[in-house]
Length: 143
Image 1 (cartoon, rainbow, N blue to C red):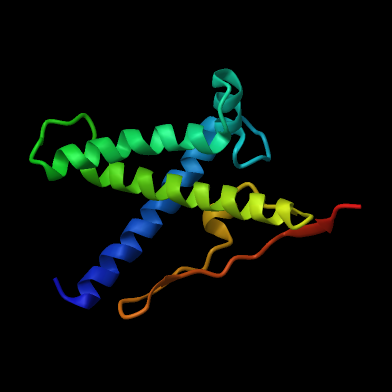
Image 2: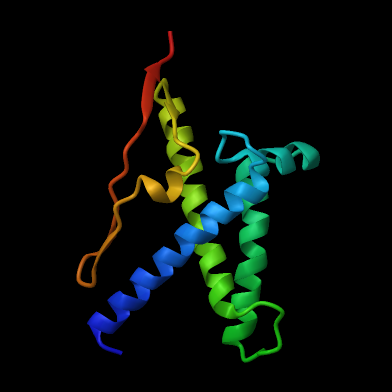
């Protein structure tokens, strides 16, 4: 595969991940403006952090990807779907880290519900790797 072909695959994956995230928000957020609502509900039920709840979901997909890499082909979901799910979970985890980092600096950051993808401008350069710029919709300092 050439670098240009790989870049086209990456563009397709990110587009699929946008759609996957949008569908997930409709299904799991239940109309809540909080992009982490599902993970917070699960965390509350289990007495764990929202990050740990997300990690459980992510590990499920990583386990399926691992099985595929090890030659197990009989799976309910195509490995491409599992890869996309894992990418989405990792992006959501990045959002949680960004939110926590902002809070620890005394800044309350409110992200739009579709923050993970809609506010990102993904660019990929094979030599330097992925980069992203995102827009924070509201910043307010704690008093």
